[in-house]
Image 1 (cartoon, rainbow, N blue to C red):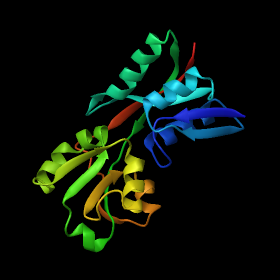
Image 2 (cartoon, rainbow, N blue to C red; image 1 turned 90 degrees about the vertical axis):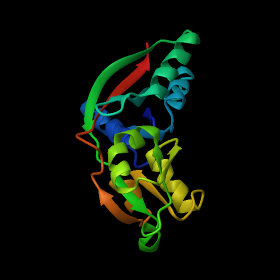
Image 3 (cartoon, rainbow, N blue to C red; image 1 turned 180 degrees about the vertical axis):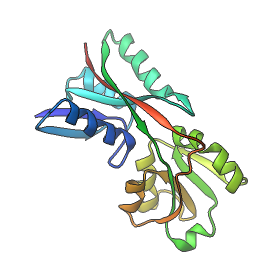
Length: 191
C-alpha cells in the first residue's frame, strides 16, 4: 500500500490535495497519513515511513508558506533531497464556526492556522476588529481543540466547512477569505 503523508489533519485542505494527487496518479490502494506540519512530512519522507508527501507551498493572498520553506531547509541540512513531483492549485474557502449559537454571540478570540488568519485579515478587521487572533498548528486541529475544550468556549475557529461540521459547530459565516484564495500544493518524495 502506498503511504501518502500530508501537512494538516483530517479535514484540512492538504488532505483534499493528497486525495486529488492519489487519484491523478491512479494509486488504487493508498493510506493517507495526517502529519500536521511540513516538518512532519519532511521527517516522514526522510525516515521512509511514507512514500509521498503533500504540503502547501504558497497562497495567492498570504504568500509563501514559511513552515514548508523551513522544513525544506532542515531536510537539506540533513543532506536529504526532497523533490517536487507535481503541483496542484486549490481554491480555498474559509468558514467561521463557533461552538454553538450562544457562543457565537460572545466571541472573544478567533483561532486558526497562521495562513488562514492571514487570508482572512480584512474580514476579521471589518467584522471583529477588537477580537484577538490565536495561531494554531492547523485549521482542522483548531476544530479539534475547540471540540475537546483546549480552546475556550467563546473562541471561534476558521477552517474548512467539513472540519467544523463534523463536530456540529454553529456556522457563523462562510467564504470569509479576503479575496479569491488559491493555495499551491506540492506532491513530494525523496530524490
